[in-house]
View 1: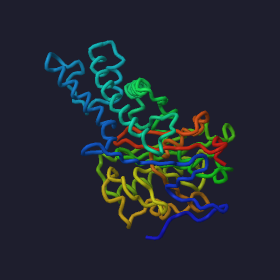
View 2: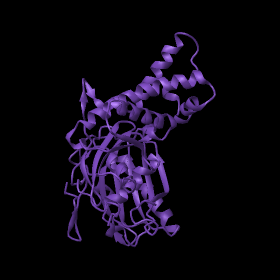
View 3: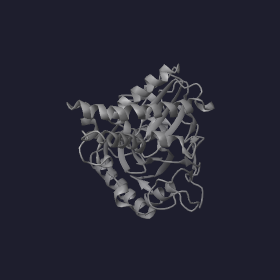
View 4: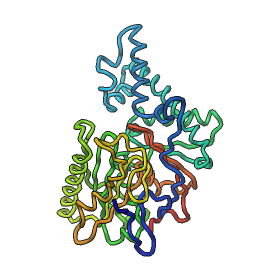
Length: 360
């Protein structure tokens, strides 16, 4: 398959998975630290929390009724677990707190290992994103992990990502592109592909309100929980393209016709030609790491034009893209990282460039 490194525009090559971005340098991402028989990140993903909560429920049942009821742990939604934590039943709240405390211990341990890595050595702040962050339980676990790290003498700040995690993975795509590509446009199309969901959105740039993209917001989005349908790779791409075309039409009808660019967030290590080197094992149905498959090429082939202009596709790791949404709010630090707690534990580390508030 031919390379899909984007041709030079304004003298600068625009490549997928780039380390040199308009506002930051990506020092590292998708670090696969190992511990024993598995990956260190497996100790601090959403399944790890479910396992801890389930273990607490089993222990409590030895001495009486389970205050969380009869619903299996994996059947409880984030909202339901939050309701137990914040509700009037203090026994239920205490049970959830037990799982939160254990999970926070694991999270602080994982973070401690990351902070020992060369690329993370000077980290001042770590942002926590991913679906787990979007809950009261998640935010409490983040705060508890920070307390534990400080108690170990580590000067580090943990902060929940500013945007809702569902939006952050779309908004960050705007930071993949130099400012000149966005000028004169009100919006872009963005895609966030995860191990459970595919999300497509129109990101309203609002550059007049904030040239640093601090006011950017998701205008409309569409989500498909592919984990329920278990599609193969081809069916996933077809559904993805249909979602893009539907949203683009809505944007055009509303006078918010997007720029001819599509930003893509995808798990794994992304080669400069847009292929996936490794880390795509949780993606739906098929080998996304095959040398015969290239997602940006497939998207451009299916959607060669947006409006009257040729489509430009740029792709990066999903944790990187989610982290990029945080750039306008990281002006007071130089070195920072992100962990995304979801199906897996995504990670990326950034160094701010001078005047990093302006993507142009």
